[in-house]
Length: 66
Image (tube, rainbow, N blue to C red; front, top):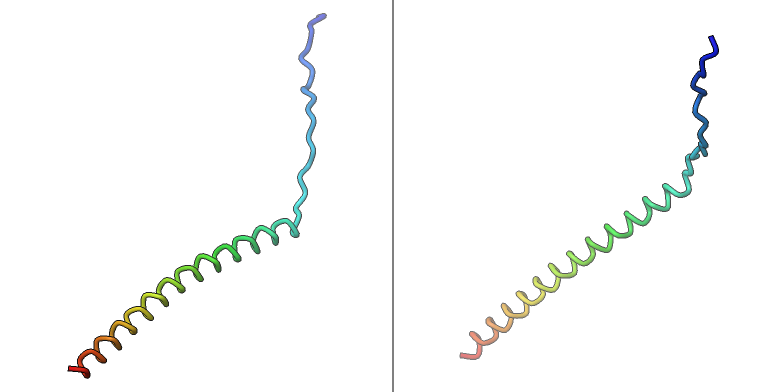
């Protein structure tokens, strides 16, 4: 009759609230990072195209000089 019963466990819980400002900042950082990546890729392609064009013009000019 005198049995020791188990007590319920006590715990500490601090609720986490949704912060849309923080999420917006993260999305903006990701967007800026992606834009930088694309710009780097575009500039490389642009430089290669310009180099090819200059080489082609030099080739044409050398053919005219012969």
